[in-house]
Image (cartoon, rainbow, N blue to C red; front, side, top):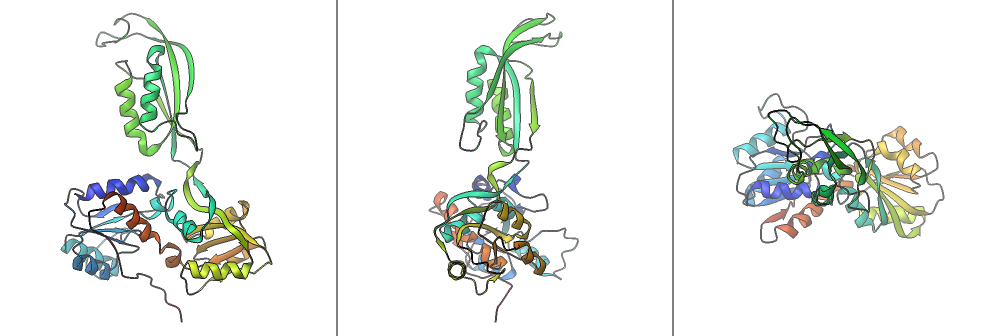
Length: 364
């Protein structure tokens, strides 16, 4: 077992191209061909996390938050980030981070919060743009069905709850090969007209390499003509936050007490109570003030997230209950999610849940 075996499986859950542009995800420290002795899963990587990994003989740390976020200009051990990086390198411990790649996963951070709260009928709150692409190609009529099936098997043609989706137009294609060509249909130097099908399919950008390889393998022409476009359509099953329904509606105070117990938080900061029944709940792990208006537009009765500033509570405008449960508290179950996921694949391997709390905030 090498590190790449672990990280490849993690990227099936949270592909790195799901991450936000500002983020730093993936293998931050270490080489992916290193044999793995054990995996320690944590929310943050601190010096005590490295010590725990050493004690438990784990040479790979899977962390939600990246220890290296901005640029590091020096490694003198003058900050906690530098000390962690140095200690990891000195002890041959690799560090992998998922962060917003897992935030944007359908089965990621917000899905775990929804599970803890028992929400039903869940949907993505902020579907992500820039993930979907379109492939258009042209192929002789008799080869079209084989190619379509190959593209579908490679991951193309999935739209929401539907798969094997394509659009097809029959027409005529023309070409003439030069003296260096070797046409599979027609003769070099001669004009050729072929009855062709134009095939268009949508796909996730993460599958592009596999899809293009399948296109080349299953297309009869020496030179394959195709177009690739990044489209602005949002992906319904990828994005930040979730919104779902409580099994039964609750009074506002009842809901806040329920939320405090389920999310194991010492404190909830909330907006003004408006005598509204709580049924539809939006959630987003970590700093989620940017999605307040989206939660309101989606018809949420309450929005659960963290790091709301003073003036942001006014954005509730007596339309919604804003509940700030704390950054760590909103993401605390993420490491359980990752351990459960990894254990399903590597059941005979040491996947260890960190016992250390990395919450830097205390309450009195």
